[in-house]
Length: 151
Image (cartoon, rainbow, N blue to C red):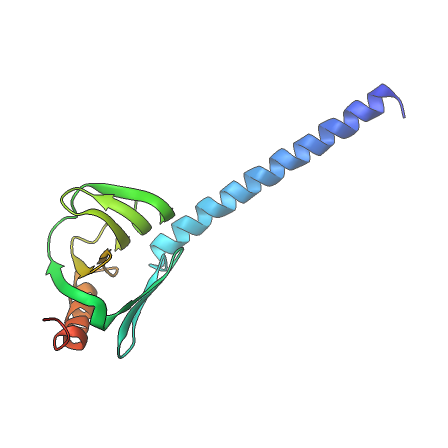
């Protein structure tokens, strides 16, 4: 092999790597957009004794550990994802920090102007569903699960 052939092979190799990286970035951006449009960035399921959060990061919160739970029909305080998780301009999943609340675990669609705040001994959870009606329905279900357990 001569120098010209070696340079050509190296150029093709690095070009292929760059194209592959661009394809992966495009796929990740497309996937984030689809999660927002289909409201699949995360799911919240209720068991008889826990609230389960599934997303880029997951949690299972025992109902007996919830010290307080509140529903807010207002815009979220200013905040951002901080640490593990995933965030776009439409949702936050994972560790976050919000003004007036501090560090918390968030499962939020930021376009929805309502949210639920659940406080445990060790953590604060902020979460909602795709719209206000579904968020309030979820709050009522959780409140019924936890009401007799919260002192």
